[in-house]
Image (cartoon, rainbow, N blue to C red; front, side):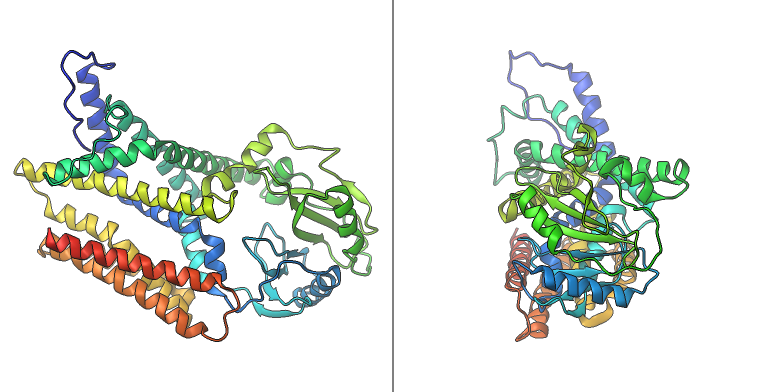
Length: 495
């Protein structure tokens, strides 16, 4: 969406000028066509990098645990089994880990939806799990809240389009790497935005390619997997999943039996896999003679975090990753989510992903700003489109903050409806005759005010009850974000 810097005389281009012009034109057209969706997916994805921290922020009263005893696990499994009822196919427990130091019991499969409860150190269920804000943002990023397969298809195609934009941007600017340190300030808006667009695009290119490629491949795979499960496996997704992660279902024997104890199984795991960290334990067909116990664990230094052992009702191993290792293809597929979201290297990696994710949002937004500036320079301004973009670039942060506020107030079930209505109103007002600067400033100040209100409201709601220090760190980050947006609004007014 921007013109390349003039080439130095006497230096031969790698590509003909006509081809570079055609690539640049295609780059601009593609960017204009889907910029709003790209921005929405990038912005929500940047926030979702911190999904685990957001879940803890939404429910900070949950006990923060580092270890838990087998007796506590047994107690919680028995209690969740009683709550779920004898007809439930599976129950499970999610054990405390560094990113999620909670003990959570699920009255359903780990892979599917179920009745989830936070438990205390003794395994007693104390509160239902509730994180509607995080759930809303995750679904928005993953499938735009569309029907699952259709949403995956749309998001996957957007990922492919973004990858094409990145590649065409490089090809359209033959000197982009030579000019990697050029950042001209104080001149025309178009030149400043072009340099910002190109420099961020250059330095962030490895990351941008990584997240777009992994996202596109993951979306395409999930779409194909859904189609395969619906046809070849007649809609049995768990059976189809066994081709990738190993056996999930056990033999069915409905003869009543006592619930198993996890103590001998955890002792076996400590002896067999001393460096492993257990993520979860799932019991298939609990309370029957055919029940099996799956222990899912992660190994240090591996991106695939769901190796598993499976035990029968007598705690005997019936599946082991040592004897039946995964194929290279399945390991590669299972490494995509942590690579895409940055969930593999601790908080420092997440922060790096967050900063680079924001950089990708800036690259997207600056591309639009360059196009608007070019139109103005040519005497063909498009103020309606500028207002439309302001409703996207600054309206969406404000709308996200508002949906979080109403969720925090107890109306989390209406978050999607509120987001749809407010997004529609924001785009509807883009057709008014308001000056672009006023329109954009209104959204910037709204985003800053709503984010500040969100953090303050959260502190007031949970004062005296929060046990998780991450809650206060997230509140501080939200306030910093509000201050930065307010500063940008004041800077824009001065310019």
